[in-house]
Image 1: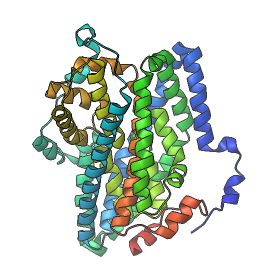
Image 2: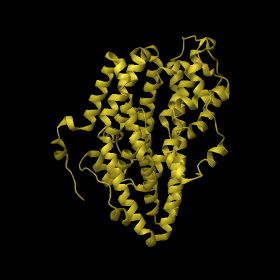
Image 3: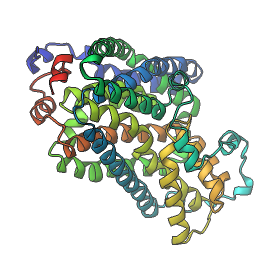
Length: 439
């Protein structure tokens, strides 16, 4: 295995560093949005095209990672342990995110004093959200089973792809030596797909330029200033959640959260620029494997975390719901708030696969509860694109921490690699097929 020293990395000019390029692109995009808004809006395809490129390899990455990870498991009990620990962790941490959002919005009171009459609001813009169809728990569970695996791949349905991949991985593991030729082919295919991802990531600065320019050009700096209090509350809550909840988890797992943030900084800033957690999922998975987290844990924890562990969205749900109540002077008892919290605990678990999931889920929940006026969500339409970046950041970092926690719990983290990778002593490489198979 080859190793690259920090000294070797430092010889690369700073302007060739992806982090520098993305930050520079974000600044240029913001300036274009402010001074040339019409031109800035026309740059939207740059960001959209990048996300489509990532989605192109999204399903193969998830499927191949899960299949290979499960196929190399010598004991199927390990798969069960990873699944159970993942679900418990996701439920506990996402509930903490909901509670943190609820507490913060009560302390900061971002909607107090707005005195908005819901009857005076134009709700035409909400029609596409409130018309969203909600599904029961039974429907949600049945939808995990694909009617066709081709259909699951075509729709990029994460849970259906994981379901099929686990079944195929189990089959390959049981077949043993007879499945080795196919496993080798899948390993080579995985290497090829990840190479495509590295090529796509070279376009991240252009995607950042387009996404930031469009957002600022379309909504303007005035839109964020007019509702700056709720946007500020959202970002402050995200910071508190990271600094307190995720930091406690990181300390328990015996690694530095700050070092992890630095390690995946390129991916995190890309998420902030595009507002999409999916845009960096393959890269985050690859980097975690390089850090010494086993492929089965990464393959199950990261993709399923998109649906079951949306920490950033959970913060947004409670904060936005109570903000609307405050802004419209809607009184809520402790029982009312407990009901909102309980419904969101369930609704948040199936929302990540829906376009505009954060806004659409909250609109559907408020409509079903009937206590908080859905019309009040019009107030959030102008600043939602800005808030989505904060919740996407927390979603991505939260799932990276989740993979490390789950890996530690099931004893599937190589701490020698972890510490060296986070300290920058070596540029850790993903294990080869032979190395992975020998574990």
